[in-house]
Length: 63
Image 1 (cartoon, rainbow, N blue to C red):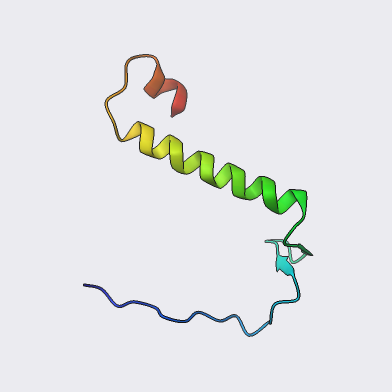
Image 2: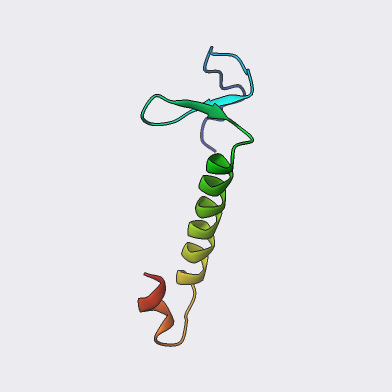
């Protein structure tokens, strides 16, 4: 079994905000962060679907 990380810290504390790639900080409860999470989950589900045998034209559409 690989090495498990038991504790990960960023040393920036938790003020209810998260950092974006451009350096902006937004509330963790913002619609933008919610949308990013929803898209991430959708991408995961598409990947799971593509790992299975699907009838045409689904693989091409999902890819």
